[in-house]
Image 1 (cartoon, rainbow, N blue to C red):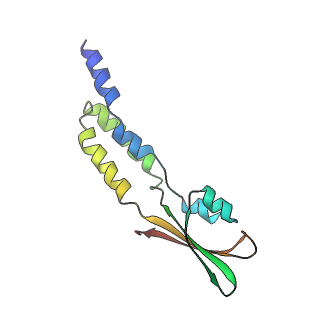
Image 2: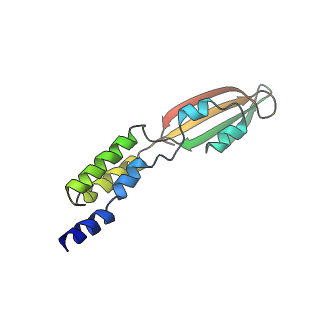
Image 3: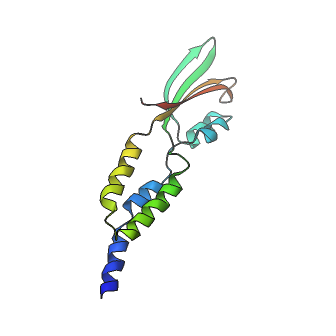
Amino acid sequence: MRGFFVLVALSLTSCSVYKASSNDGVSIFDIEQCKTKYCLLFHGMQLIKTEEINGKRVEVYRAVARKSESNYMRAVGHGVLDVATLGIWEVAGTPIENSIDNNRGYIIAKVTYSHGDDIENMEIYNGATK
């Protein structure tokens, strides 16, 4: 019976583990590989401004930046702490992961197109807050 309660307690934990392991957002590496507008859109960049400069179309895109690549190690740490504390770690771990999610910046890409939707030049800014 005692083992049952331990299993139930462990099955109810993992919110912080899930949040730490989720890796939504846009990676700068993925954006740098793009050669067309459709690639940017596919990776989740959102068009926020279009203008014409010196006869060329220039567009500005924005997306939420991906968390650091160490998020899987954080997830393992949360899992170990969950098991070691029988789930009590969730009281601290979930708010910690929420604050990390809320403090992520944006990736901004200023793109100049040559012909049609082919990218001629791209400037990427990381860490913008708006």
